[in-house]
Image (cartoon, rainbow, N blue to C red; front, side, top):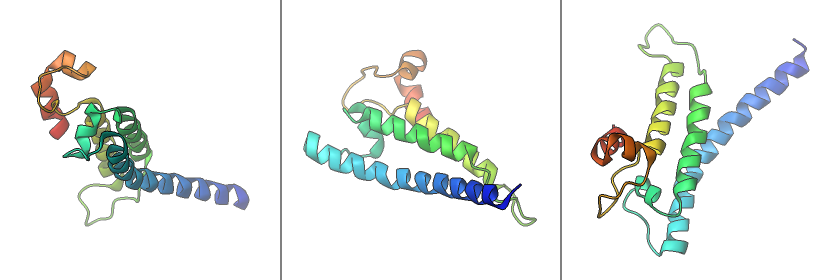
Length: 131
């Protein structure tokens, strides 16, 4: 492989890692400032923003983070480690999808607000969200 192609691959990999960090830091800030500006308050937890007009920001950002984490290879497992970076990142990425698609319970009510709640029920979906 020519050296300039290798450099481009390293830059691309680095850009992906930076984007993941940027999304992870930007999500709470967007939700906090957006909540104050539009709703006049900050929700008790980041997951409660699912039940506001910021649902798309919440779900979309978690899905993007999930894709980055699932595709992340990480460093090879060393002899003294019992789990590899790849597995930890994959579990974290799948968990991000779980938090996005299995919302917590609706504050103050029993209203079905997602496909997962309609299929599994409100309480089981909330349990999956918290797991």
